[in-house]
Image (tube, rainbow, N blue to C red; front, top):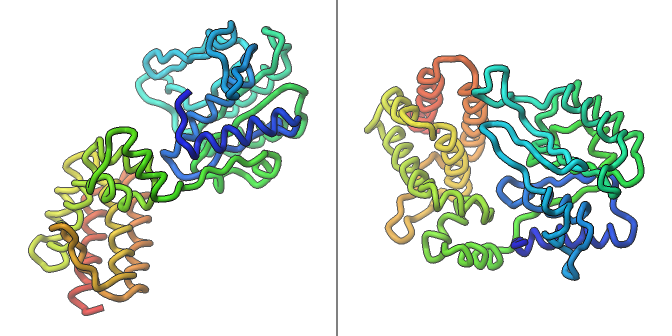
Length: 334
């Protein structure tokens, strides 16, 4: 299996604990998005179930258990053939056209019942819950019962980018596997190994605050260019060249409104922290009031707006209000 260096460190630590008999029955894989938590969880699960592990620590890929391991995607549903593996995630709604927004208590109860069965292949049972932070209060309480009464040779892997949304009672019963951002050199080497290098890769890594997985996604999706557009857009609104309502309509014209808001928040804080920025390699920089407290307040407004855009409200009015607040910061000289 091809894991990045930081993924391999997490995997090796888990396998070392397993070899020493210290691997917890519940593992919490957490850390920033796009660092490969899912891939490591899958690698750990397959290795725990494998009948003939390789000398490098990974699953063999050839035994009966490994042959049954891959999941099959059918529409929005995920099916699996391995009798001793469960993958718990968001299920399709009753119409089958969308995924539900929460992991239900019924899913967790079925998992508890499954854990009480005998493993069919004579080895461990492994379950992966992802994203674990989308369990509601009821499903979290149901999972707690499973965690409080662990059975031998049963492993539960919880995967999340937002561990703080899990109840403390669940977090405290898990062995933590925390993903951290790699060094800049390691991140750039990883991007280069994927054919992503040069000034664009460096700019993307900077925009992603050192997250190589996120930088790679943005490079492939053109989000780095979108970030540049957000700079120009905010400068236009702040200078009065473009009205807040008009800009709000532009931002809502495609599916990238929330990503634009993310960029706006990060750019504003960067500008407040370093008010004397200069363009690099012909790139624009954000012009912002050099008042950190004012920018921080606007940062909070952006986060509220991001939540409001998910609600059944007039998104154009919500977004226009945020951009109007941005312009007011210039008009009042704050």
